[in-house]
Image 1 (tube, rainbow, N blue to C red):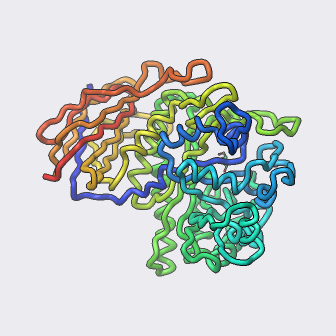
Image 2 (cartoon, rainbow, N blue to C red):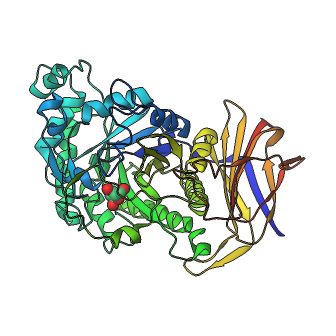
Image 3 (cartoon, rainbow, N blue to C red):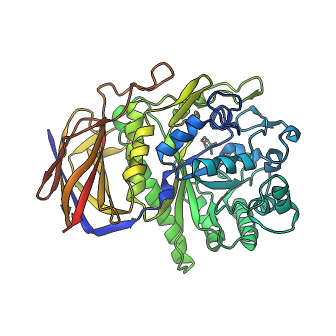
Length: 503
Ligand code: AHR
């Protein structure tokens, strides 16, 4: 049995948590929109065609903000195709995912869905096949109250009040050669800067996200961030980063992959701060991790391109297992740890496509394994993050070298007196006897303790058995004078939610 010591102090705050770190992403891709959030004629659909079973699960998941409409899809999308009378909307080819886009779901439907679901929209403008003019017209349509063409077109479409969308992504993964209209950093910085300047002329208080790297392994990573920020620093608020992880047949390395996200976040911050220093700027750029998840990407890369153009084909409907859920829990710990800089994060995607929620036409939506750590982190990870010092034995991994056997983060919500500790035991073999020293707090009660662990890490929830995996309520956390003690089972994720008093 390994021994772990965790030390937290009331006075060592990291940052206020921006609730937008519990975001997600709906792309016109596969069955995320069509057959996912929108399925007219389904027994689960409301009068607008929105699946109400999905809406309920999105609420339970605790999603705060949803990015739309892509993704790679964005770079070939004309938003005007998706507004106005449905019978007049054209069908178009979607080159990103080789499918047929019906445009029966568009901007106004997304805004209705967001309102009904209680999520904030995060909109993206196409800087691949479109550009400045298109972006400005879109912003006029969504945010402007004037007797002008696009603002009035929104009114004509039944939406008198502007939507007032705050957060805007300037394109998607423009560093990627797979992206329609891919650009080098200099070219992209010029377009993004022009678009940002124009958008600000229409709405000064917008939050603009400039594209960073599509992943940490991109050959241009680092150089890309430096160039785009040097050219557009004053015009934007956040820089994006995207990352997906997968088990390449080495489970121990996979269980430790969040260390890669730790490096990635730290590196982007360091590059942004180096630019800040060079420019003698007072402003700090924050991060929008607007695509992250586990994704069996190598399986997708090995697939043949379809021969036909189908509407909403099944694309990357990964079935997540327990190990995937543990990793998602750990990635959330990494995100919380850098809540000083990560202000938005989107689990990509929301429904069916590499998603925590799955649907089939004839069956109520169900929760994938990854649903649970996200839902509990969004539920309890509120208030401020506190520095969480960990003294744990190391485990050896082929991919990431020697890493801590346990990772953890603490959040404290002074308004409710609730303190939550999120923990992961990465060891496949050893339980971890963990003492959590909470300086400056007196623990009054364990309000909740939830553990996700299974002997079989390959277990999944699926169509036939949609409740095979679920976290269990635990009662093993012991209150002691210094804080709490707990034993973490091998390969497990856990949250302990406490009622505390400041001592
Ligand atoms: O989420 C799936 C795809 O991954 C997105 O369309 C793209 O932005 C990323 O490469």
